[in-house]
Amino acid sequence: MKLSRLSGRKTCDRVMRTGKVWRGKTMTLRWLPGPPRTLAPHTTGFFVGTFASAKLHKSAVKRNRMRRRCREALRITMREKEKMPTVQLLLSPRSPSLTCDFADIVADVHAFLSTLDSCPKPIPK
Image 1 (cartoon, rainbow, N blue to C red):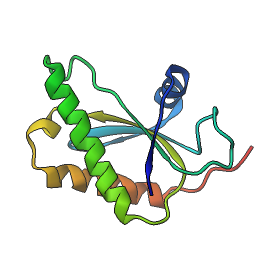
Image 2: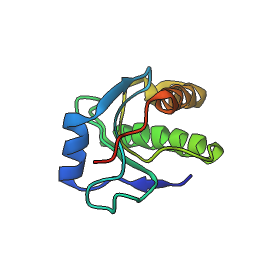
Image 3: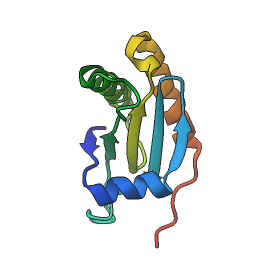
Image 4: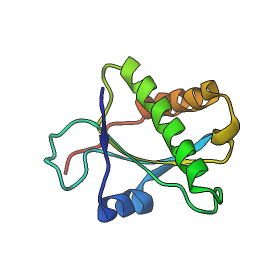
């Protein structure tokens, strides 16, 4: 399954406010089931956005590297999966994601996806 972008201030704020939180060793994920409100309700996909606060690290280059490593781990893991639910996801790296082994980040993504598979499907409104 291909990753799509989660964009727009209102969309990201909604996921931030009302989304469920999953915390791992290398990243924090906030997610909501279903597609963004700006798209048709029957749209499928994995919509991913990232953010990294300046409190995370002083250097923007290092914050961007943390973001890229976490997003790449998610992309690689999603390539292996065939059927995934439609989800809006905000990914926030944590400081260990800069120096840890890439396999640790991939293990965090696998742990998140296993919890996502066990969650009940949303009831359409």
